[in-house]
Image (cartoon, rainbow, N blue to C red):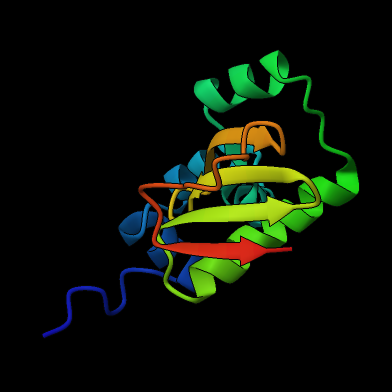
Length: 126
């Protein structure tokens, strides 16, 4: 027989007793981070410490438009299955680990004179 029958007068009592509704709601409120925010953070491009040092030492600063194009290039590389990509934007070159969306290094056209890039499996020209 069913042990729940005739013991509870409402579905709320069943929910509170068997599903531990109080603990679930208190856990969901502790983070206060929306799904949209988590998704945005996951989609955001990161720069490794090495890349940040290269940007600083080479006086490279990205405009919002260039940053958006870089992110778009990484998305396109990911759609093609590229793992480590060269992304060219204007006179700038970026080596990006696509699965982690992390810029590994950056250089401008003065450093790209040799035109040799290693350890990449694809390139995106934006």
